[in-house]
Length: 247
Ligand code: BJW
Image 1 (spheres, rainbow, N blue to C red):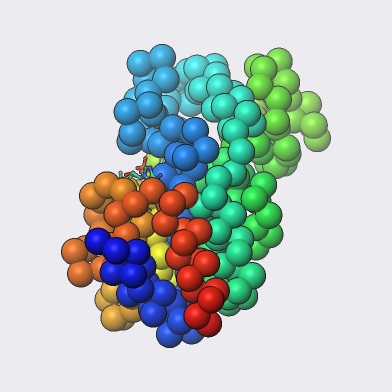
Image 2: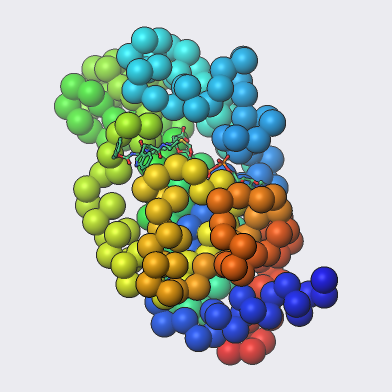
């Protein structure tokens, strides 16, 4: 298929949209070298990431869970945002009403220069004290650094959202308002299997809004969505460049 056949429907829809939103997932950071959850590199020391990202795993063996998060922090710190992250920054400059929501905890959107962003599953470089609830920065990658700077307790956990936990109230309320008003959602690099994020495209479709999905592989998107079956780092820069030329 030519570039026009692939991208033109998405660009037309973006030009018409009044309330566009983007939802990103692990796939947008794949080209930076960060393993996705459900991809072949997602396993760590034979652990399935989906079993580690749970309150049960942390209650049973907090040391192993922290070691996994520290290992991931090391990887993320050594990687850079890619062309997909930068293209979203450019699109946000062109469309100030665009809302960007990420399921990722890696901070790469911000490192690319995106200022306004909802991190619905938290941030791996922050931790939360289970004694005094203080949320603090934690960029260290050793277990010895795990003390709350406020009260000194070592009862700290990564400030991320695990399975079975709720997205913090103030964030989910703003996100749900965005979703209810969106007439277009661009889902990028997500398998669409984890709720509530997986429900956003469903809600936009229900109100006859447009769903654009960027993902090289099949996922839970519908066949009558606008499907761009390419890596985000390849598709997004072209999409944004052509959108910029036409608006
Ligand atoms: C590329 C690419 C390239 C590769 N370019 N693409 C309703 C129905 C059923 C169940 C539930 C429900 N509501 C809630 C639940 C329970 C649960 C849930 O959804 N379970 C499902 C498994 C069914 N949800 C929750 O528990 C959530 N809490 C909640 O809803 O609270 C209220 C409640 C609780 C309990 C019951 C009912 C209500 C919380 C979910 C928290 C998810 N946390 C994690 C870990 C975060 C911390 C960390 O990073 O360690 O979030 S799990 C993991 O999955 C992570 C991700 O953000 C999330 C989504 O994954 P994502 O981003 O889609 O990654 P992948 O790997 O799945 O996909 C990558 C994609 O990229 C692939 O498709 C590739 O093809 C593609 N790709 N290269 C573009 N270059």
